[in-house]
Length: 378
Image (cartoon, rainbow, N blue to C red; front, side, top):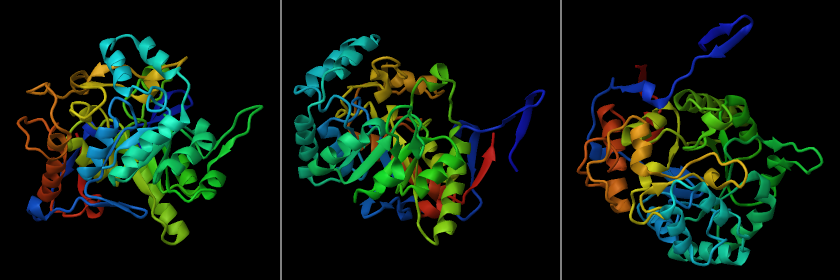
């Protein structure tokens, strides 16, 4: 039963929960973490871990995306970021991190024209490495850029905004109908972010292979008053997935959680709530391969008129979320962040190992069955 509270005469609000308000409840025989399988399959693609990087230049250099794939995850390229705007990508990123408290530098870099040939060249570099290529475009530019990135080698297309719907209506403009668009291409589409059951179900009916819950780390709560309670929303979208599975007689749509995920415990709780995969942001910014070299910002931070994100050191994001500072703030390899070994006790290194141990302690050895684990509200 949904929990509603009256906030005034004739006005109710739903009580919802964030990931840090719930905990796992072990009720089965414990298992060995060595027996836990973290494999994630979506469409024709298989990954050793259910971990995806948020599409931001703070993470995604070609080296980072390639290494993310080699470590068993999926790195996502932002087609509308700096990759296709600056021939010297490294120099552009240095300008951002040299002025971390001045968003105007990032906005100026994003104002440069998008060079489709340069973008295609860099996507091809990732494709030639042999890892799965995933590229993000915004709903506004999907028609324009999707053919470019697919031709360059994109195998999975992310159509992602802070919040999207199956059809975008604009007075005097041509709306983007995702059902028609997805039906016109052969590449699997992951779409989001969403914050409710109904929108998720509409996107599933539009043909999306995956649905993104949430919109990462941003300032939406301060700028537009929208804050996604991740535990509740993941569960709601998982319910939409179940209803859609029944409706279609077997078509399974994956749920990707993107928000409030800072530690291996958050990864485990997101999957326990119903996610098939999780999207990681600040926790990956410490990687030596990451573009921000310890700084993190969402792609929305570079918006020319209404930025909804800030540039911060990764530790700041983690501390603000209530987690302890890292014992060693210097950068480490992406391999250590994902697979360890860890020398800190707060779940910010060896994310896969932490997930495996959480599953094993609760008596589960595969991701799908782990979605049935008991939960408690703290």
